[in-house]
Image (tube, rainbow, N blue to C red; front, top):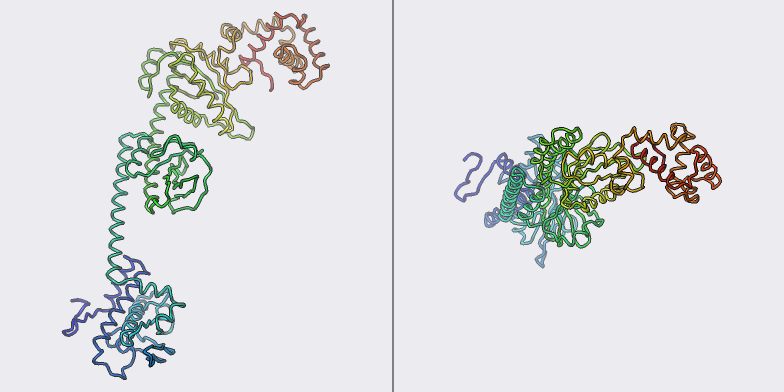
Length: 596
């Protein structure tokens, strides 16, 4: 029978110290160190109780307390000092009831293995003594070890008191000792293992299903809806700026409350799940990270916090991981589509074969048909301290915005500007203007950037792209203090610049401006700027004075100098209009600039 034997015919089980050591080790691994302490105490107590019953009829009234330990082979010897007295009223009194276990089998396991305990380890002996003495005296007596050689003490020392006398000093240990019986402890452990197994199986099935959805090319929206279908916990996905990307299981007309500031309650676990309290709801959140970069935030929403389970953070972590995979896939798909879009625009700019360009349109993710417009966007930082502009990141964010607003737009970066070609359902392009307005408001405020957008008139065939591209540039360069300018707003100025070459405009400017045409001269440049502002303000001195921060006398002096150079008066309406047209043309072409 190995290390286990039966003694005589009474079937008392004898077990070697090494076998018990192995049992203890397995128990600690299965149910934890604390529960093992309680298990061993109750095991010893039941053992001591049965031993006391067995020897009840055989005992000698002069028998030494603790001799049962020696008889069972638990210790080599036991010492006992003090007294345990039964009073006339039937009560029991312990007077300095202390003693030592010599050669404790539990302590020697640690000594032989050269391990050092942090607390007394003779729990079986404590239980055995408590069970035997409690049966003998008819009341609950508890033996607790106060010193132990397993933790470096010179002896294994114990003390016996009534249970109620230990409560104040050792209440926590007594609660552990009396927590449950052995069978219930094992049943609880088994139930916990079954629950853990079921949880792992559910978690595995959940992750497998979502991962399969990614390989089946589910979009982010479809993936979030599928996660909600499987778990029935409302989901909220936000970008790094707190903008809602997708929800599932939440009412669309009540999403604004999730945009309000929330109180962070605590970090739930080491997987970086955070718990927040909002306005009438609770939120468990986990970051979606790719290459250590925070891309988005995935959250469970609870109206009733009691419905949140400890395992929810594990499922949320899996959702965040699968969303990261989905984002990686969508980024790869976006980059592939962006290469196609960039190629189309670049070939249009370089006037390559229109038929081959039109054939490429079938690779776009949306229908791309006339009428079209071209737009150019110039981006500048709001301050000199701003960092360099990441044009690729701008393309990514603008593309998502156009997709969100169902605007069929292809976009690429050419030099230090963005070029957009848009397919419209409505020739008035009202919808496209609304999207552009969102760019110059929301994006500008969020990123501390200024967007200057020029939009061409619409055209129906790609052979007209060059003209439209020129119109967009002209509209973008027009100085009207507006972030968005449509070419048709320029009126005759637009047609004048579009239909004349740069050389022709310079020739006319030299002829009409005379000495003012030498605008590389700082003094002449200053006079030309004064003339431009004066004509823009319809020759009103007060407005010109305020804009240039000059006195009326200073303005009048400059106007007199200008008229002398021109050899004509600015009261000549046709001359003034023509001069303003020429100056604006030079500005639109980028041949002339004035500091704002």
